[in-house]
Image (cartoon, rainbow, N blue to C red; front, side):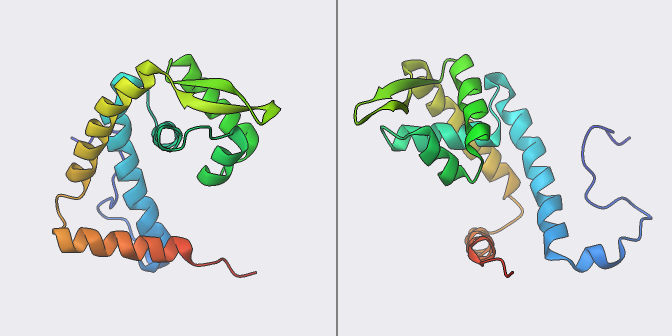
Length: 157
C-alpha cells in the first residue's frame, strides 16, 4: 500500500504527456524525493535545507552579515531574517554587532550550533549517499557537473 504522505514520481496508469520530456519536470521530481528524505533525516534537529545551508555558510564565513547571507542563498532579506530568527530560536546562530557598521549585525554559530552542525552534517552526508546510491561515482560527478551547468546558465529575457 502506498503511503499517501510521500511523493510518487510515476503514478501507474497516468499519461504525463509533454511533462516527461521536460528537464524542469525531471529535476522537480528528483528534488521532491530528495527533500522528503532530507526532512525525515534531519527531523531530530528541526533542520530544513535552507537552515542547513545557512549554518554551513555562517560557520565557514565569520562576520557574515544578513544582507550577504541573503544574496548567497538567493532569497530576499526579509526571508533571511525569518531563517536566521528560526536558527536563533533553535540556539544555533547569534547576531553580533558588526564592528565596522553599528547598524548591521554579523552572524555566528553558537557553541551549540557548532556542536550540532557536526552531527547534522554527518546526517546530511548519509542522506546524500542514500539518495545517490543508484548512481556510480562517475555518474554522481557527472550529475553534479550537469546540474551546475544548468544552474549557471543565464536566463534569457
